[in-house]
Image (cartoon, rainbow, N blue to C red; front, side):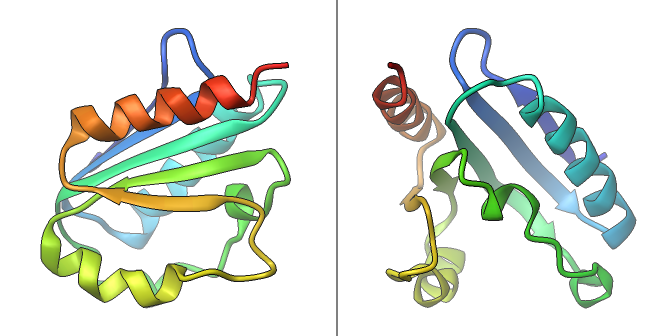
Length: 126
């Protein structure tokens, strides 16, 4: 599958690493796997998505709208790793929104993104 979804070994961080061409069926399977992992956490969660190797999602319009994790009050932050072109395309869609319960931050380096996700995760600890 072109998405490897896993949880951080010691922090409440969900990590999704995308590669190749993603289909709507694979996207649905990834969502189910991500939701199962989310259910294992008790408090706020940080989502880190490394999309640098994602080539395309040609049938994205066939994937039904699904807020899922992004509508969850438990979502503390979203950390996205992208190349420069996708960053410029997606940025307007993620500008401040009064309905959003989380922040989104972009990186072009996976290690820096993970360090930031770990930092954000530490802020969720009581």
